[in-house]
Amino acid sequence: MLETVMKPLAALIPAFALLAGGCAAAQEPAASTPPAVVPSTGDSPTLVVAISVDQLSSDLFEQYRAHYTGGLARLLNGAVFPNGYQAQAATETCPGHSTILTGFYPANTGIIANGWADFTVARDNKEIYCAEDPARVPQLSEERFVASSINLLVPTLGGRLKAVSPGSRNVAISGKDRAALMMAGPTADAIFWWTGKGFGNFGASGPSASVDRVNAQVAATLASGAPALPVPSYCDSRSIPFAVGERTVGTGSFALTADDGRGFLASPRSDSAVLDIAEGLVAEHDLGGRGVVDVLSISLSATDYVGHGYGTNGVESCITVANIDRELGDFFAALDARGTDYVVVLTADHGGLDIPERATAQGAPDARRVDPVLAPEAVGARISEAMGFEVPALAGDSPFGDVYVHPLVPAERRAEVLSMAQGLYAAHPDVAQTYTSAQIMEVDIPVGDPRGWSLLERLRASHYPGRSGDLLVLLQPEVTPIPDPGSYIATHGSPWDYDRRVPILFWRTGIANFEQSLPIVTPDILPTLMGVLGMPAAEGLDGVCRDILAGAGSSCE
Image 1 (cartoon, rainbow, N blue to C red):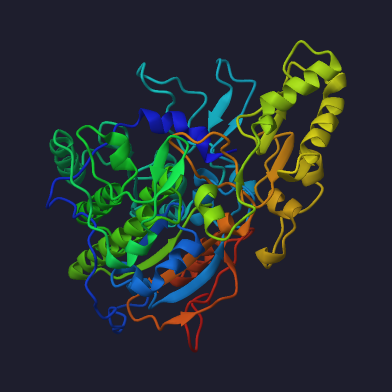
Image 2 (spheres, rainbow, N blue to C red):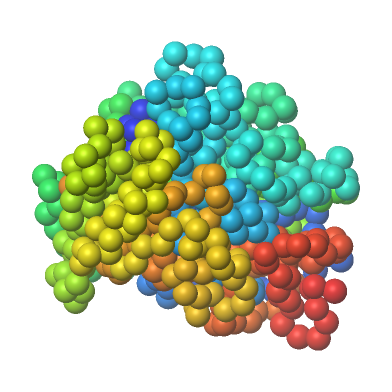
């Protein structure tokens, strides 16, 4: 399914902006020397900081690498894996986040997309949001669901630590509920995300002074809006206007009008707020300072909203990445000042594809928007007419991904419908391949180098029967699955490497730098961190421990 499944949610999220001096606006970083490596202060860190930068592809990360002087520069002094992979076909926010701290692909986490169809639920809307509890009824009329990690079928690092050390704390903060929930899992002590009226507290720890402070700053600033953010000089060459539908993008710098909630969310200011809160949560919970190992999960959402709203290759993305670099530098400096012995991993839940309007003008002649005739209701209508049905033949919300044979189709005709649907999709030039659920389940979850996985194997890594579609449709490379651009003009979700490749960086005080260009997968992160922490290896994971010590010895022993 498309990330655009969640567009209705995004439309409900009011925006907010930050007071000057609260969380700093983006500005061009001054040249500086990356932090020096100093001796480690202990055998094992007491705080794990897991950072996901939503929609930070390896391509985007590398594009501005020469300009990093802050937090990203520090991480480049650690163990650098520039060719990390969200190796599965389902490259969306929820499934991607479900792999980062579990050690499993979505085929085992159960999080196969941002949403899936369940025709057994007793409600008109048969789509299950990945981060909802379908058995619970919202308490407020304006709520669309009750957010929950119940659909996540495996434990996270925070859960594993609490199982052996109940005093360990598991804390998460994000602009998105699904990101925080998939990284923290059900054992979160404190978990926060933007609710539309501020960052809310959904853990057992009670109110947070840091959250209250940021929420107050946001509320005060919303009344007047905020000026444009400074544009780093190296971003100037990216400032080229492109017409997309009724909009022009490529020259924005995130000026906010009053009450422009959506504008805030799709700007670097939202990441600044998340990191400001994260710094406060470390102090409030004394994370890493109580003799046990704690986990702080941070998901920065602005890169994703910017990618969807402006594309990935314009000045807007350049400003956003510069802001992340600077703000992470400030965050790490605050941890250093506390004397915390911490280990960091930074990665992404997926990559992204730029707008075809810009891509075709910049050397990619095959980039295009998908033909709207591939929408499941359109293909299903053709099938119903051909087969004499008065019921819909297919269900689904996107011209690619999960397509379901509608339950109103008579049981004896389902195979015929599925065969005809597969033929209609496969005949269209925008479609690369189609596979039925049965075909996908004939192969094992793949192992080894993800670069060589077939499309069928990529699908298998994110296929969970009962949630995944009866038919999986894969579009050709460079085909944007948004036929009519609106508030979202670009997206992700494909099995192609621009959506699969993500950076994976590990850093700890005293670590010797190395860079390994050979691939690593996000399920490797959990066993790698367990090795650093000295935890016994877990059995049955999809990922394996990666040694992040450059010389003699191994962090996996």
